[in-house]
Amino acid sequence: MHSFDPATRTELEAAAFRRLLRHLDAHKEVQNIELMNLADFCRNCLSKWLVAEAEERGESLDYETAREYVYGMPYSEWKARYQEKATPEQLAAFEARQARKQG
Image 1 (tube, helix red, strand yellow):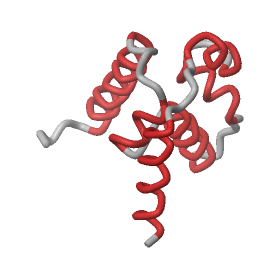
Image 2: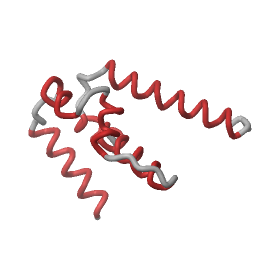
Image 3: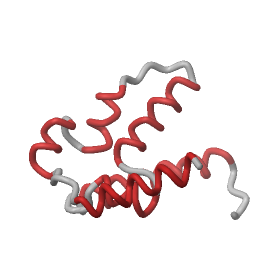
């Protein structure tokens, strides 16, 4: 990667993260289990990563606040509006992926 100064690099990474959140927000039809099956991360993972990064820096960020940031609304609201029940095929793929990771 181009050798940007640290501030510019941080700004670019933050902008890319915000763009990722906008992209996920524009594609609410993409379910978390699909993201997990294809990319091994989902919106909840992003929320957990935010919490972990805050903790590493001595900051306090609770998981629900992080999820509201990632989802753009309280998670319970997003779940009620947009989350669909996982299909048997999605669940089987998820379980197979988890088994491969553990084995």
